[in-house]
Amino acid sequence: MTAPPPIYLDYAATTPCDPRVVDAMVPWLREHFGNPSSRSHAWGWQAQEAVEHARGQVAALIGADPREIVWTSGATESNNLAIVGAARCRAARGRHVVTVATEHQAVLDPVRALGKQGFEATVLPVQGNGLLDLDRLRDALRPDTVLASVMLVNNEIGVVQDVAAIGRLCRERGILLHVDAAQATGKVGIDWAAWPVDLMSLTAHKSYGPKGIGALVVRREPRVPVEPLLHGGGQERGLRPGTLPTHQIVGMGAAFALAGAEMAVERERIRALRDRLLRGLSAIGGLVVNGDLERRVPHNLNVAFAGVDGEALLTGCTGLALSSGSACASGSAAPSHVLRALGCSDELAHASLRITIGRFTTEAEIDAALLMLRAQAARQREPMPHHD
Image (cartoon, rainbow, N blue to C red; front, side, top):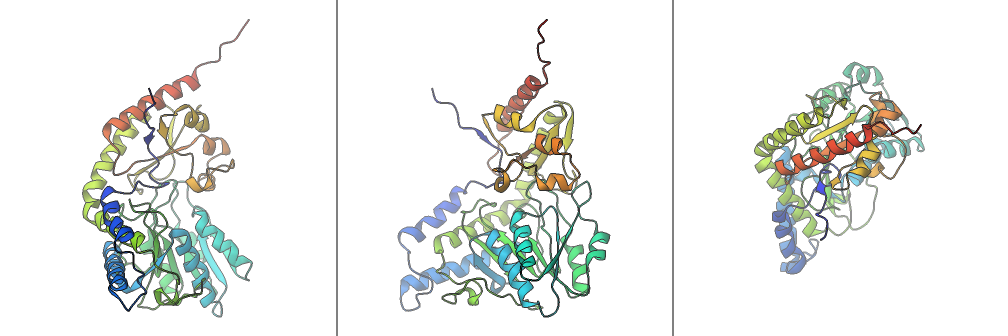
């Protein structure tokens, strides 16, 4: 008899593609295979129409103008284009950028790369609950600051930053604000029209869409100039050249349309599952929750247990797909930079697990996961037999 597949509780690493999204994509691989840039025949016109329809679907979820959506390969590329592209455009005004210690490496690394191009960066600490202190941010902004980058929903601890307030601070001083919203779409309402945010990175695969497609939202009013990182066929107003992958774009559009339609109901269902999970985990004893419990998305619980090694818990629970930090960093033995930024000791950071739930998680799966975690924690806490 084969073992049942592990229970998937790693939705922050990636989400399964919703079957409805797959169904929307397949015709654009099979029959409608034209290049959206082919302007002289029906295959190209059809593909172009599909691309523009999806652009409208992505814009609708966040309240943007479809013309502000620039297709990219995902949030990592969007972050690089926003941070490096916008900073270079404003280099004559100043060469200082501000970001936060708990950002994804796809933000921290482009900021670091700017350092080699004559820019200076301030990386702000967070409070113990993972939230940015707005006074610290205000003090860090300088006359030569040209860009700040703050993520909306943290990928490891799920806390939600007040980007509207952060944007107001930046806008008063004429500083651009870039927001990495990869983990936010379909989980929190995004009001692009009202928020003073200039650039926003989006991706499909954290919201039940395909991997390899994302977007950068670039504000038109007030217009934000961005220098392209790639040069080629002039697609996407020259900001991001390259043949558009129609099937993936259609998939992202469909995924974002579903996210908008189902977000309110899905959030409540996931909140109930999270509360059930939290009650069960509390019963294990010695529970520590990393990150603010109120200002966070219900999809994420990042926890540790006193006297229990997280890595051993992870390897012991072979029937669970969880992570001990972000998927991009899980190949590294160093403790999570996010948990260290919260003030966690190396020991606690290593002991922590990220449990993320989503659209296809069931109550039965939560209960089965709790049984496994409880049994594994108890096994680890058993006193070692000593021999006389």
